Each structure stands twice: as C-alpha cells, then as structure tokens.
Amino acid sequence: MNHIKTLPTLLKGTVVISCLLSLFSVNVAAKEGDLQQELKIAAVSQRADIKNNQIIFNGPVKITQGTININADELRAFSAENGQTKTLVAIGNPATFSQEMDDGRIGTASANEIRYDLATTGLLLTGNAKLDQSGSQVTGNVIRYNIEAQELVAESTGKGEDRVITIIQPENFQTEEKPKQKLPQIPVKKQGNQ
Image 1 (tube, rainbow, N blue to C red):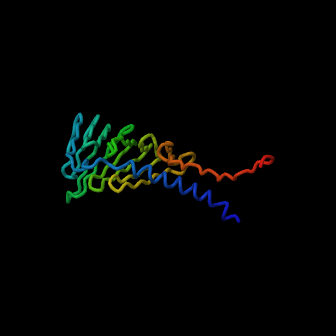
Image 2: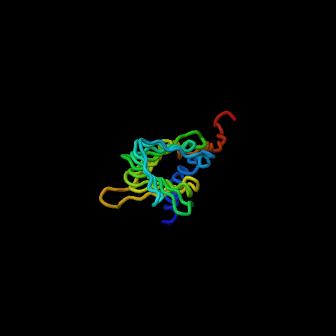
Image 3: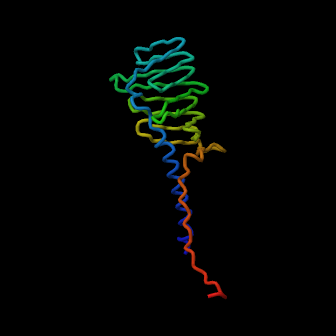
C-alpha cells in the first residue's frame, strides 16, 4: 500500500526535474551564428606575453562576439601552442556575460571569474557565480555551462550555509490545465404527478 502513496510524490518530483531541465534547455538556445562572428576586445590597455601565448587586457574591458557580451576589470586571452584552444578569462567584481537567445530573451551570467573556452563554448563561472534566464536563476560557488550542448552543473563549497540555489519563475514551469470532467448527471424521477 505504501507504494501507492508515494506515486504522487514521485510524479511531483518528476515534474520539478522536468521543469529544471526545460528551464535551461528550451529557452537557452543560443543565438544561431554568434560563434561564427568576429571576436572584438576593447580595453584601456593591453600587453602581450608572446612566449606564453597570452595577452592581458586592462580595463574596463568589453568583449563582443555577435550578441555575446562580456564585461570585466581584466581579461587574459590564452592560446595553446597548436592554436586549437583559445580561452578568455574575465576577472571582475563581478565579471558579466550576456547573450541573446533565439527567442529574443537575454541570458546573463556573472562571477568573480568567467572562463570562456571558444573551442568548446564552455563557460566556467567561479566565485559568487550566477546564471539568469528569464528571471529564473541558478547561483553557487562554481557553475559550468556549455552553451552549445546546453549542459549545466552548479556546485557549492558545502561549508556552512553555502548551497546551490535554484529559483524558477512560475511561467517557466506551469502547464496547461486540463478542463475538469463533468460527472454524468443521473435523471431524477419526480414523485407525485406521474
């Protein structure tokens, strides 16, 4: 008998998990073509460490690529010897990331450090990390998000009150309500005049 009572609880849990998955999948489709656009970096100054394949930009720094915008106090751009891996590390208080989604909404992220790997389209948000889509949010100490694959992992330090917090706005998980079925009416015989 206990298994019957737990079914509604399991169904509610499944609905919540489905909502969480849809929160960062359906609405977070990155703007088509952003990653094929030129990458522009505007800064107050820059210096190159050619030996280590690194350029350091001092800010404020603004990076744009299509509808992607990154703002930081400092930016470090790294390139591997083979040129295959290109990474941007934005540092700020906080550094911010935003991108227009296919549906026209803007997705934002912020953290003390944002690491953006151009080859894998991965974002690594470290320190006071926050990801926001249509008012729904995920916060934690570290958030990993792959823009192209639409995969998200959030972690906390696990110390004290530090936890991963997820806030889902009602419009992101409400489903259409099915009309209530009317019970069949049973004819009632009147007594008296028949």
